[in-house]
Length: 283
Image 1 (tube, one colour):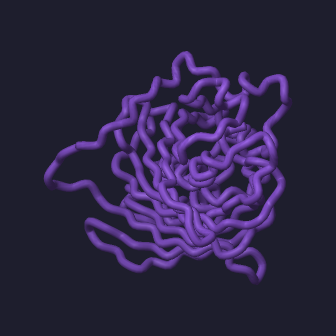
Image 2: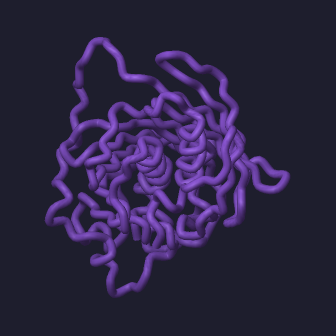
C-alpha cells in the first residue's frame, strides 16, 4: 500500500492542481475523508501560513478512481489568518467544495479542559487484522491503510453486537504512521472524523446480517486545535446522538496517544437503502 503522503500528493501550481485518486481508499467509492484530505492539501499548497485551522467540506457527487482537478481560490490573506476555496472536479462534474482556514500561532489566553475518554491505550489491544485473521482481507481496501484497535471487548467485535451509537478506537496509518507536512498531518484527522460517523451511528442497528440502510456523508467539518505529528496512534472518539428524518449526525474528537485533544468536528449523513454489508468498525 502507498503511504498517505503519496496517496494525497498533488501536481501543478498557481492554484490549479491534479491527482489521480487512489483506489486504495475505496469504500463505497473514494472515501470522503480521503477526498477532504486531498482538498486540504491543495489549500496548503497555496497557503503562506502553514498551520491549518479548519476545513468545511461538502460532497457534491461521487467520484471515480480517475484524475481530478483542484482549483484553489484565495478568499483572504492576512498576517494571522487566511481563507481558501477549493473545488474538486472530475470531467464536467463537481466532486466537492471546501473552505479551508489557516491561522498563525500568536498570543492569547491558554486553557485546556478537554478530558479524554477513559479507555485503554493501544498497547496490548488485539488489532482488527488479528481478530478477523480467519476471515480473509477486509471487505474494502480502505481498511488496509490503517492498523485499528477497538477499545471494546473482542467478542463484541467478532459478534458485531448492537451497542450505543458511540465508537472509540485507536488507529495508526500504515506503512507510514506520521507526516511532517502540517496539511498531510491534519489530513489524518479529517479522514477519521469523516470515516467514523457512520460506524458510530450504526451501533444500535448492527447485526451479522446486511443492514437495511447505509449513510454516506453529505459533509464533514474539522477544527484543528494542536498539531501532533509525533503521535503515531490517534484515538477516534465518535458519538451520534440523533438520527431523524433520513439523516444521521455524528460528532467526533481526535486524541493523541498522550490524550491531548488535537482535532474535533462532525458530519451529517444521508440514509440510502443498501444491502452490501457493514462497512465500518475497521473490519
